[in-house]
Length: 159
Image 1 (cartoon, rainbow, N blue to C red):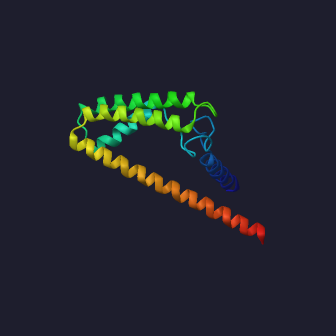
Image 2 (image 1 turned 135 degrees about the vertical axis):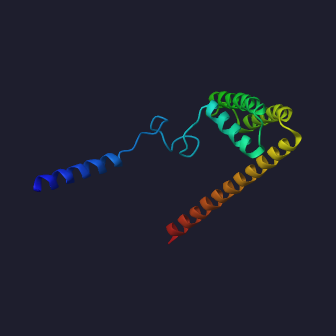
Image 3 (image 1 turned 180 degrees about the vertical axis):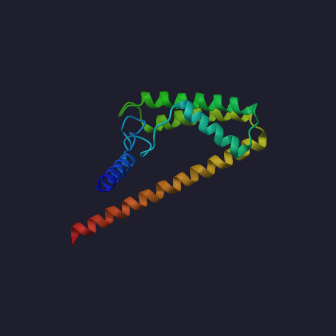
């Protein structure tokens, strides 16, 4: 009976320790570093697939529209990756990069406009503007949080 209890305890502990094991992050163990605040960096193909799927759900894209929209998003993702690869600290100013990205976005919007119906394109623009507004609000909230934390830190030092 003692052997059986001992074996059961060992088996339970082995199972529990095996369950506690985690797999390493797919991005080579650099989770939380770099862009994306801990999110895994996706390939251009993965990003194009995700955006196409999102638009398919939101705009009810037809089977004919989906590959065209994916091709547009894939080209855009490849262009953004190439621009990011060229950008090293001090190599390009942020305003020039922003201008380049805005020009690319306008170019791809024209391509999307040719593929989507007018109603779909209007809905797409509205949703993108809403998303950008929410991102701006979150950015502002983070800045306020950092400013408040900084003020609190100064108060603690002064005490």
